[in-house]
Image (cartoon, rainbow, N blue to C red; front, top):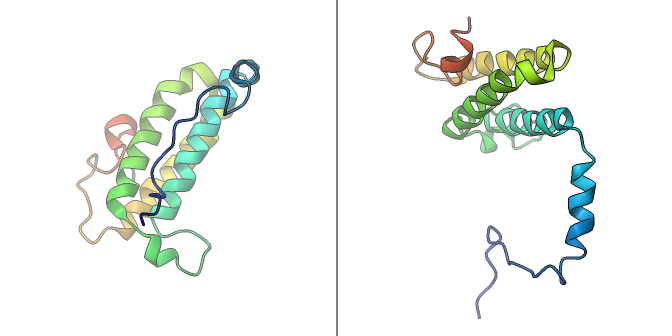
Length: 128
């Protein structure tokens, strides 16, 4: 007897998953700035967990610097690209959070990256 893979997704038809047109209407009402900042916050949260910064007892077990590097780089690209669109009021706190993650990554790394070569630094410049 096989068990379902927890990482697999079972496709359901539109009828089985509810009213898709209602879901589309719901997302259409969300301002772009909210979608962008929500995505950035999710990336920040995931990167923090992968850096071992979670408040959980098993935070050290969740640490994965390779994954953290990918998440931080994606966050840097998003924040850099979105900043002109979302304005400094929203981009400033995102940049601050990004910088904190980049510095935490540098502290957690056994072999530090060269200046300008850390995660996301090709988008943000060197972080000291």
